[in-house]
Image (tube, rainbow, N blue to C red):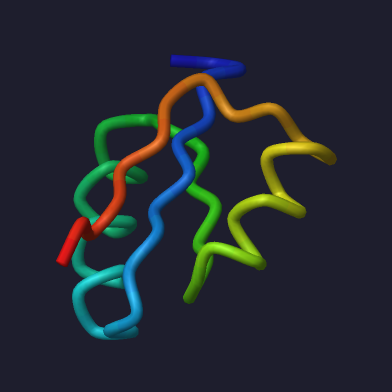
Length: 56
């Protein structure tokens, strides 16, 4: 999965880390954000291929 990046947005660090570890083991490059402000900055700067977010 070279070049495939996933942005994980969740306010709970353990959840973000668990998801990131699983996806990294599958070959994805994971980027983590704690909130919408961080996510927006990452989206503008790095343009991830996929965004996973906690909607609640």
